[in-house]
Amino acid sequence: MTCSQPTSSAYRGRFAPSPTGPLHFGSLVAAVGSYLEARSRHGEWLVRIENLDPLREVPGVSGEILSILDAMGMEWDGDVVYQNKRHKLYKAALATLERQHLIYTCTCSRKEIADSTIMGIDGPVYPGTCRGRSLHKGRLGAKRLRTDNKPIEFNDALQGRVRQRLESAIGDFVLQRADGVFAYQLAVVVDDAEQGVTHVVRGEDLLSSTPRQIYLQQLLGYPIPSYLHIPVAVDAQGTKLSKQTCAARLNAYDPVRQLMKAIRFLGQRPPAELINEDIASFWKWATENWKQEMIPRKTAEIC
Ligand code: GLU
Ligand code: ZN
Image (cartoon, rainbow, N blue to C red; front, side, top):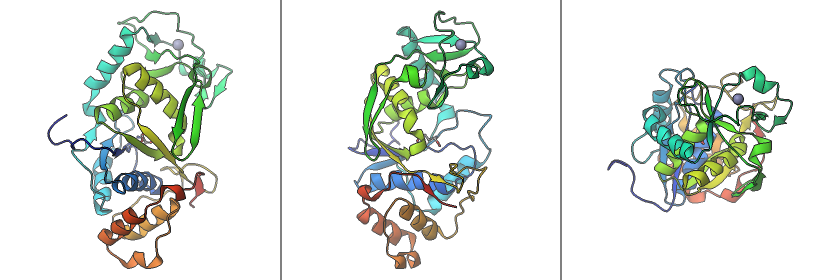
């Protein structure tokens, strides 16, 4: 950690957007939820740009995300971290798992895996075809992590008790793709630990990823943060907001109106007059009156 990083804190949260498209209302909700959880407890709030996959990164979007956060009056602690600058850390974590004989090279095609008849909660369950193979340093293929069926359990602050058996629900999962790109599951765990994140607040669409992350934290000897999965905004068809749906690109105009909408979505009840106030007054009200217990558990329709 460099000296520009925040000092140690009892609460350290983060917002970790992927710059695959402009910020929309759904991402604002995740940003605001994590920000208010942190600030209402006098905690720190970090921003990390999750740009692992160069093919999915849209040029200019990282800068746009940061300027919108800035326009919204959301101040982050320390320097913004970019995942594309941290390959060394992910490589070292993968090497630690390799030494535990938990990694193997998988050469199955997408089609071969899709033909696996078992559908899990997050797509087809990898049937373990390449499991018996040893890790071939030179062989091209994806690096998969061996899983088992010991249940992984945790208490989500909003969603309650979650329990998952990785081997049957997910299967051995990829930590590094055949083209060398590190997987989100590995990078997020390495970064949350390396950055000292104590509390993860993010969209409920990632709830089914959390057991994979806890499994990795256990194997790598990292502390396990607290988790809070907030509802995600969906459109009238029940699809998560994304560039493809009705989600309008956020703009830097009228920040208070957009922030009011975001905290209402999170179950808070700001007085209507707050809309006429400036950003600083909005944040003062929102931090002082933030109530985690008012966040609805379910996804809500937004357009
Ligand atoms: N980068 C992920 C996304 O934008 C979020 C990762 C996380 O919060 O763990 O969906
Ligand atoms: Zn395989």
